[in-house]
Length: 285
Image (cartoon, rainbow, N blue to C red; front, top):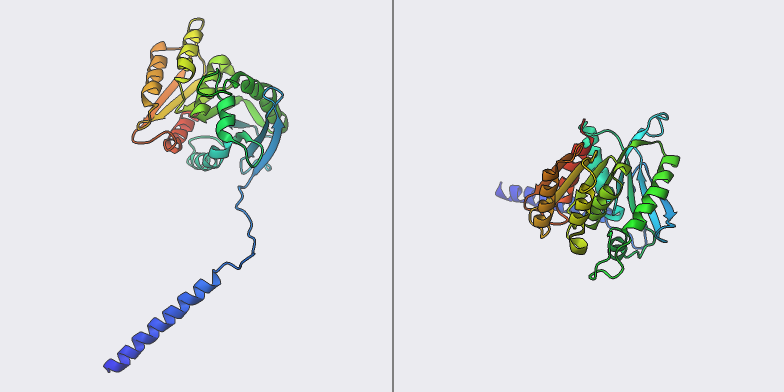
C-alpha cells in the first residue's frame, strides 16, 4: 500500500515537472525574433521648429477616446513640459480622474525635444529658466520658449485640433515648475490654470520671489487657478513653502490657490500625487 502511494506521488511530481517544462519551452524567446513595441492609443507625435529658440520639438498629443465620434465638441487642453518623462504618467492620471468624474476629458500635449540623443538636462535648463545663472552657462532662454508657446504651439494646436481656448492649463515640475511660475507672472491670462510642481524658486538669485514682487507692485488681481506642490523630503521644501506663504499673504483678487507638501516624498517621487491633486483642483467646479 505504501509502495503504491509512493509511486502515485512520484507520478504526480513527474507530471507537474513535465507541465512546467512545457510552459517554459513555450515562452522561450527565439533568437532573432522581433516584437512590436507597446503603443499608447489615440496618440500622435508632431514636430515643430521654433523660430524663437531655434530648436526642434516633438509634440506628443493624446486625444480623448471619443474625439473622432464627437465631431462638434471642444476640449480643455493641458500643456505639459518635460513630455519625455511625464506624458505617459499624465495619460494614466487623467484617465483615472476622468473615470471618477473629477475632471472632464482633455487633450494632453507633451512638449519635448526631437532626436534620439537629445540632451534633456541641458535643453530644459536652457528653455525653462527665465534668467541666466553662473551655474548653468547656457540657461536663460525662458522668454524665447514662452514666445514659442504663445506664437507657435498654441496657435498650432488650436488650428489643428478641437481645443477650447478658454480652458488651457500649463504644468511642469522642477525647472518645468520654474517656467510655469515665470509664465504666470509674465502673461497670466495666457493660461487659465497653472500647476507648478517642486519649482526651483531660488534660481537666479531668488528670481521667482523677485518676479512676483514686481508683479504685485502694479497688480492687485491674479484671476487664475494656481496649484503649487513640493516633496516634504526634498531640499526645495523650505524655499517653496516660503513662496507659498508669500502668495497666501498677498491675497490677490481672483486667485484660486491651493498648495501641497507631499510628506515623505522627494523631488521626483512627489509627482504622481502632486499631479493628481493639482489637476483635480484646477478642473473642479
